[in-house]
Length: 336
Image 1 (cartoon, rainbow, N blue to C red):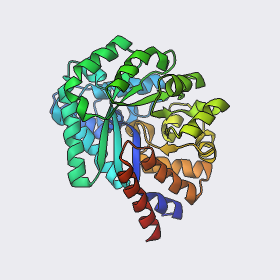
Image 2 (cartoon, rainbow, N blue to C red; image 1 turned 30 degrees about the horizontal axis):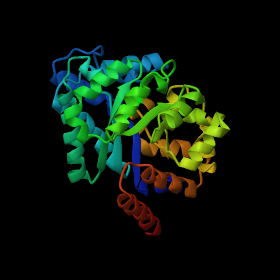
Image 3 (cartoon, rainbow, N blue to C red; image 1 turned 90 degrees about the horizontal axis):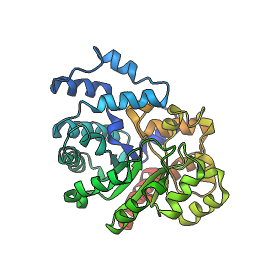
């Protein structure tokens, strides 16, 4: 193991941009399909793995929704979440903030409670058995309407105390944050943290709408904010976190080469940027693999890697006391 890899492995870290449905490995998908008596499009595990090697966004979405179709019961969502937590623990992740997409399940006839209960039970067990603390973030699908979002907000009412925030994901182009301005204002009034995917493929204007017009607490991706000096100044002054997902950006052709990632420039500009895996089963790696890949591509220094780990806790939705505890743990690990 190289010195860089050893440092990444031992650093405690948080993961703040993870879609639980995007952690669905082909082995588990096939197991659950068999358990539920569902005939998938894949005759063998090898065929399923080959399908995960997509070459464009549409192919990714096709396999993403095909895989999701086998998730029917609470145990399925528990197993999905638990499998991710075990991988996170192996990467020295101490805290996770997980997105889930209930609309992708309720539209298939799966009850909201089935989805939420399975995920929440696994997260509770993750704390007691793996020592990983967590928050759950309910995402709205931006290709659907704002009225659909309001319907989900109402449907999820019995669970509002169980998740800390709301998100906005799915196809970005043509679906600006402003499309959901009323919905996010309502969510803010209800006390939720606001996380919006913006500036992944969409223009800097989308980041501005999310950050300034809607008042996002965190910007997911935010790559294209680098094109607007005024936006950079606001991000720097407010220390609004950015959740960068290097291998995701590469897989979805947001960038052609990891050397084009804005992450190092964001660090050097004093932005509160973090490293995350997004949809790791599909994009080639969990959080430590993202740290390793981006560090190698951009030749990040050890101090920059340590700063990224610190940022992951600073950007998390946790108390100042908990942040301080995790930051102190980083210092203890480095001193050992």
